[in-house]
Length: 172
Length: 173
Image (cartoon, rainbow over all chains, first blue to last red; front, side):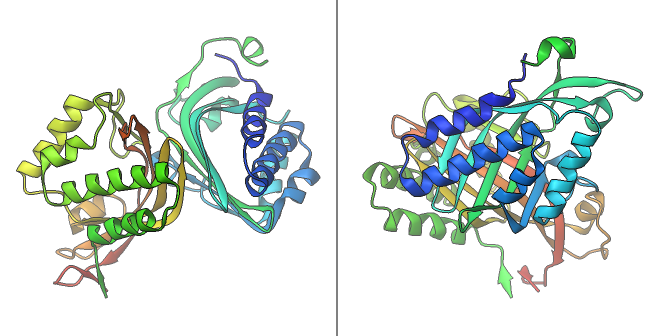
């Protein structure tokens, strides 16, 4: 199991090529947002978000703070800044199985993979330290307004697979 | 004052089918509409006639654990069990978002169901004994198609996160 942070954005860009202009615009904006997250380019992230943008995280193990809604572009950028300041931006990707585009958004689902600090992963044995490579089923629904990301909802399964590969071998 | 009404969800899909101009998308919507209508009248043969023999349903999010997915025969037996017990409990998806593409439909929104006070307490809410509640969970429902039939209802769930008391008639107050 590997994580290739470019693969998600590349998949979205590839889908954009066959779409009409309004759909292309949303898909390329989302791909640019993913690229900016991976680079830790906080100002580029902010430039793609509507001021009142939100992030909501759904799934049975997401019921308690701090995994509730993040409200506002500043808060979204700040939450990513905190992760970046704790180290490198966490490598992540969604291996997209299905992708749909509507007039105001895009929806995709597949297997999400990321390298995360063990304490951030629900369900691991207490005391598990260091980084782990996880894979979990997820869907992401992105909403747009006036060409900007108005927010996105992430739906998580509760069943994680944790790789026993050394992290260094798991990141491309 | 509003009751929980699966018929409104059916009407939502019917409206999408009526206004769709792409013939492929319209056919998908009409198949799903037939599926929902057949479920509502507890007609197992009509329901399963809309489902692909390669069906593989999933439920993610930990609300209805389904670790290995559900193939056609188990889908049928589950529907049969529900219908034999008198049908589905009151359910209604309050559709907020709709997507359609060449191979799938997606609906997303709050899903209403009914909880007893005991169930609501077990779900972590403060309740009045004997009161029934409308529970708001979150649902993202993918409906992929294969050869003109429903390949799955792949459900991403979030458990109830808000409740409202119901009056004696079952209406939301």
